[in-house]
Length: 156
Image (cartoon, rainbow, N blue to C red; front, side, top):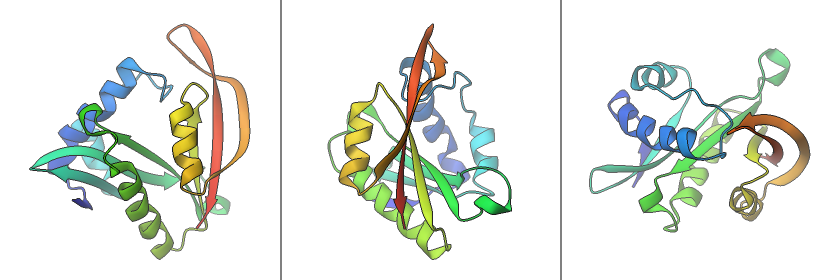
């Protein structure tokens, strides 16, 4: 089941996101998310979760791509699925709901920022109609290494 997230889901979302932050280069940040911080973010940006038998198995969210009124209709999203729930089509389902929500809100363009070391993320987004628009070499640093950032875009 895909549904809108509520603050009660924030600890489960933080658990999924923090494992990605701690253990992978899917995101370049090293600052872990807090349940309180996510609950606060839910006040101003949409979050959706996938849930199975009462357990949060993934989430997706979006926010304005860059600050300022000129970027008001371009958003960047984040999507993560718990390790045990991958390969079940949850990512595709979450993205469908997320993109539909963005369209209803009048958004024009959605951006995906993907680690160059995440070919699955690139192929996933390609299958959803995203197109690579930029590859920024060595803009992220994590685990003592430089990483490329792949920017992909989809017009909604």
